Amino acid sequence: ETGVTQSPTHLIKTRGQQVTLRCSSQSGHNTVSWYQQALGQGPQFIFQYYREEENGRGNFPPRFSGLQFPNYSSELNVNALELDDSALYLCASSSGGRTDTQYFGPGTRLTVL
Amino acid sequence: AQKITQTQPGMFVQEKEAVTLDCTYDTSDPSYGLFWYKQPSSGEMIFLIYQGSYDQQNATEGRYSLNFQKARKSANLVISASQLGDSAMYFCAMREGRVSGTYKYIFGTGTRLKVLA
Image 1 (tube, each protein chain N blue to C red):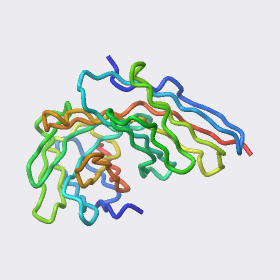
Image 2 (image 1 turned 135 degrees about the horizontal axis):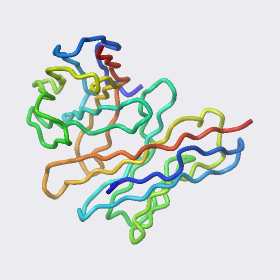
Image 3 (image 1 turned 30 degrees about the vertical axis):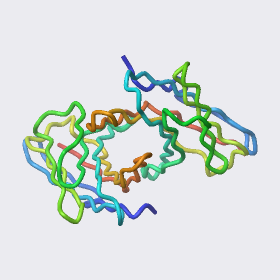
């Protein structure tokens, strides 16, 4: 186990609703990244937070937003949910440094009906 | 254009044999990192190995080694002595943006490996 935890494990929402996903990073890690993984595809990078600031973003619209807290845990918020937002959402934490290797949590499976 | 290309959707290998999973990448960033992850059916991504763009030696981690050919922009994963537990989806990934300080991570589409008894 990596020490990265995510909640909830599964979630069902309807189109147009808003959702908040949570991630606790591994001890000693100050960087958190979020990914969306649709079924049968590779993860797509949403954004990264380093010391409470966003320092990298993929090609996702502004309705995908995030926060990082002083204890380095993080939230991913998605507004105005669409059917295509149904996916596994993965959180990864890292400690920076030369390799900045990311360690992933178990993911949150979001279903939008 | 795809920044990370994994051309093998599926691979089979006999137990105890070696297998190579292909990965090519495309970037103009002079400083980048290359990663391989394993994703079993349970869904969790497991870090396997890392190669930095300036690393002179190929990375190795136990039974995993990365065949890094910078001029060809390839970063193939070699798994030696395959085990049944190696059956999983394998993703190649690249991190760009270290120089600018704004990171982006790109994953390939994955290769599903099946180890046969």
